[in-house]
Image (cartoon, rainbow over all chains, first blue to last red; front, side, top):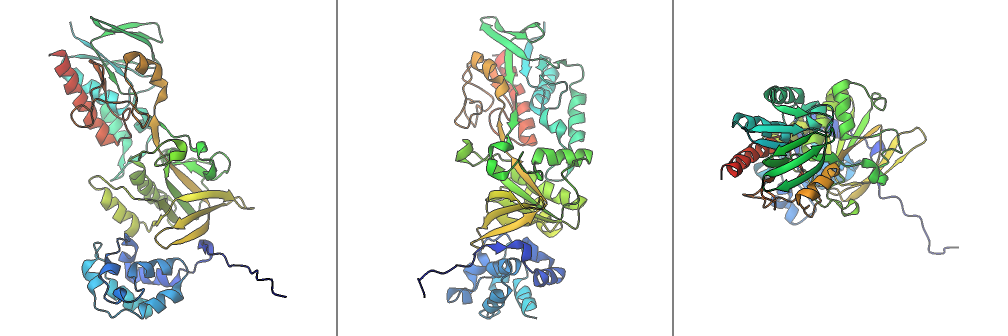
Amino acid sequence: MDFGFCLSPSSHVKMDSVDLTTFNRLKETNPDINTCIACGSCTATCTAGHFTEMSFRRILLMLQRGKEDEAKKMIQRCMLCGKCTLVCPRGINIRKILLDITR
Amino acid sequence: MKENILIIGGGAAGMEAATQLHKMGLNPIIIEKSEALGGHIAQWDRLFPAFHPAKDVVDKMLDQVKGIDVRLNTEVVDIQRDNNGFHAVLSNNEKIDAQAVILATGFDVFKAERKQEYGYGIYNNVMTSVELEKFFRTGKDDRINHPKRIGFVHCVGARDVKVCNTYCSKVCCTTALKQACEIKEVFPDAEVYTFYMDLRMFGPGYEDLYLKTQKDFDVKCVRGRVCEVSEDMDGKLVIKAEDTLFGKPLKMTLDLLVLMCSMEKNKSIDAIQQKLGVANNSDGFMQNKDMYLGMNDTAQDGVFVAGACTAPKSLPDTIGEARSVATQVYNYLNR
């Protein structure tokens, strides 16, 4: 019998079990990946971001919080125009990192 | 006869003010309640932003005060004022007459047990920034056994209405990143996280330290305040915070948690401060005349303030104020 009750899964990010393999692999060839200060410039200027959820800042976080599949899905929105790389105040080579993630 | 200036407090502010006044030909007298000069900074290992040894600076300051009248293990127990100046009674029953008084009484470190949710004094592996600094200096602390994962909590006892401290303590952000780098130096294979709300890297070279923290030391800065700490069956710490940039709560196990404790007003001087007629400001620190041109002056003529007794301050701030208070005192005596 269905009483209309259910268990919701925890929305906590469980940092103890996050797999950082992809992020750490990226870090080896792109050490500037660590220097993001989450200013949001990349997202604000993103051509795809005006019409979709695309946000490089969030992609970096997703990789560090165990949401690699979501990150890879989001990257598909990128049109590789490179405006994000132009505006980044930390000089992160975002376009290259985006390409490296999908490699 | 040289004019006496009573300086209460023998930390960075008191020592530097005394040095300058001495050079001006006046007679500063430092009253220090503890057994040594140097104050908090003498307990510190290295200074931000460039990891300069604190001892270096302290030794230079100590060298400069050689030949200056210093009373250690002494407190001012009473002070009166009349037309001839100030008349202080010390805890050793000595009486000192002075033409001006400088309050350089500095700060107290916030008592971390007051933020009970962080578990300081309850869980073994929670320590304060001051204790970590001591570990860097001495290499000894029973709580630090090759931690694999270390967390730093910013703003402990600051920007927090619940402990009645709404102010920012100014130096803890930079100190946290400095200490995060240092602990990573000691334990290179450890993961280090800092939990911040804003990173206030306000000074020259501080932003460079931030970049270095991220790039060279691989410290992970998470924006979000740790809300609670508990202990699991193995004695490890389980913390909860929201990653506010990611928009999700997170949970992680840590081997060591460091609380970045704020500065609070040093209350041991309250009775003397009251007798001198100096009020407190809304943050509980001493009230100066105004924050721009009157930062060393108080409502009382002849009573001056310098250093962290008026607000949380960095060492360069304090030294700057100590030098400016000397000028103010000099001008006051020669008016």
